[in-house]
Image: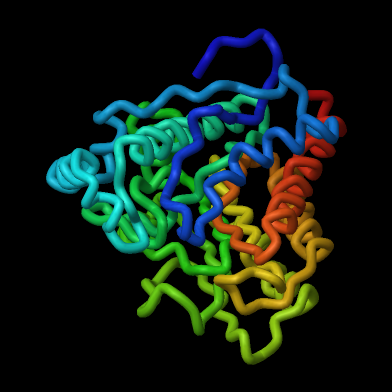
Length: 311
């Protein structure tokens, strides 16, 4: 993490960009577009931004197997890597993801220092220890937690996963870890299948017509969970894909509802004086501008938190 004298709590890099192919559904370009829109609208200033450090192999190996990392690198050496299903592989892609994973680790450190921070990427919760899946290659959430625990910075972490898809990779990695509590609210009738058990799951079906009110009601259990588990850090995946126009989701949430979600969860962290690291996670709206606006609203919620706390 680059040195700075300012209390910058947003992590971003120009190197987050990569191409997954012209027809790929994941809008990687949103990482660049979000930053520039936030700057244009005045939501972010240059001094708000920290440049992340790419993770070293030692960090990746805290979660991922050596054979898996080698397989990815071998795939990246051939054009056939771009034919690797939903997870095309190239040197550029692996570089960008490695830097984004470093961004999540840096954002967690900033959150521990200032109470809140955000990586303008991350939330790669479908990556398993030994395989890529669901547009995810390295599991940044798991890596950051394992690294901070190894360094003696924290022990107990709560993951609040509000991506519309269950975070199956993260669920598997921490399945038997009592120091990591996973709360996951997701669409039952959607990828991945089958689901993996987590500490507390709210499984909602699209045919029930999941609106803002129904979704937000499901979050009401969080205060008790936080109070009982007493995490030293919360990692919040603020997915944009519960949005009603998302191509890969089936919920009916509005932009206003998703902003209320952000305000509620970040507010809970503030009330409990628990550091919170926010990640973008998914977002695949038919109109990319909708996804960007949802993520931009998350930034604005955080900026509001910072202003009320004198940061």
